[in-house]
Length: 192
Image 1 (cartoon, one colour):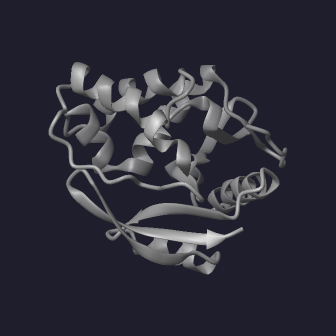
Image 2 (cartoon, one colour):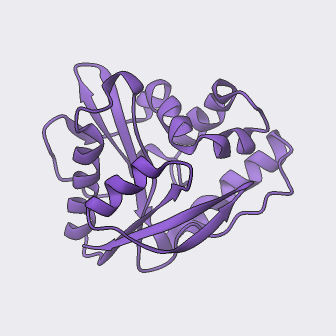
Image 3 (cartoon, one colour):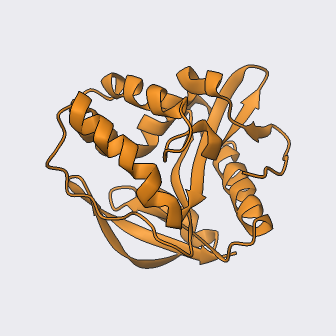
């Protein structure tokens, strides 16, 4: 992953796992709990701490940029080439089946070839409203463009109209829906 530097935004490192895993869980909400077979978000942290530190999976540090000041990570964005989703997802699904006994999951492909997929975008609650999410999104868009991609997409929860409004204001358009776990999400996409 070639990274273009923007002030306060840097590539994630494996040792960032303790600060980034809660951000990933926060972004995924109920789905993170479904994956970890729990109703308590904090109990899902170890699952994402584990995968964040590993390479070649959809929650890897390799695909993540963080917004940080000093040693505090205030936000993160995880994104990758959509055509790689099947190979990035396979170790994750195998692990949750073996470790968390999650085997009957209905999960559409969140993305596909031809789209850089934003898997998670999250800002710590105490830092929301400062434009950090927009800066992370701008960095991901800039990087995807520099790598020659033409589209970028993400899923937004129907229960989160504020997030949808933000993305629509940034040029995203609805292109359909996806089912992940027990919820239906709206698939938004924009040209780069």
